[in-house]
Image (cartoon, rainbow, N blue to C red; front, side, top):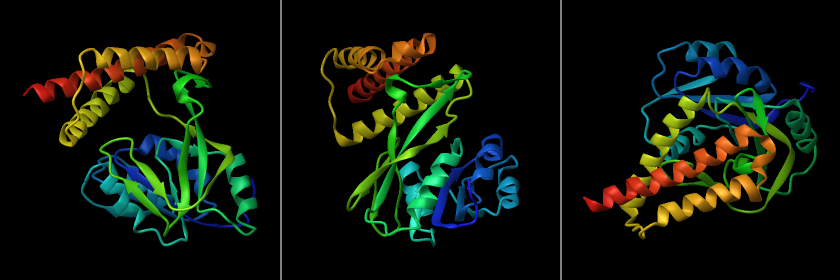
Length: 253
């Protein structure tokens, strides 16, 4: 990796008590012209670590994923924005690829980047978790966030291009952490769908969960990851069941 060229990109991260992740993710970001961190109330050393790595800290309240991220992106001063989470690491391969791209004329408005999850001591290379393409780098004046409570995404004007370099995703500390987030995300999803007026059919949650397990474990080859592939497929199915169970309970009130 060559650090001779600063990339005209603002890296934007949401931060709250992320000191452990920041120690791993920030060292690889020195090649970017600007790094922004929106801190919604850290009580650990997150801000100190950010300051040590030249990160501009923006302090503010939490307004939900979509609105908070929109507020953060609007502070970017570079012509391109890089949406990065604190538990993600930019690989040398990706940086080298970006440096090559930004030396030439760019004819697209965004770049899709693949993420690979590291969990329980191994890389998850199949199933629902990989490949995991996300629009993460985009022109600062050609985007809009789809306003979801969780798993928000970018609505881009114009063409995008897939990069070969990946982001390493250290998403969950353990299964307890994964299960806690499933509980949280399923609640947010159910509340969002309740506001949208979504109704559920009898047995819909079970049918959808069964399909997601089958797709993750068999169609997307999750079985090739061994036991963890099986557990991931079960966890994904459980999340779907919880979403529809919670929505059904909300609709019954």
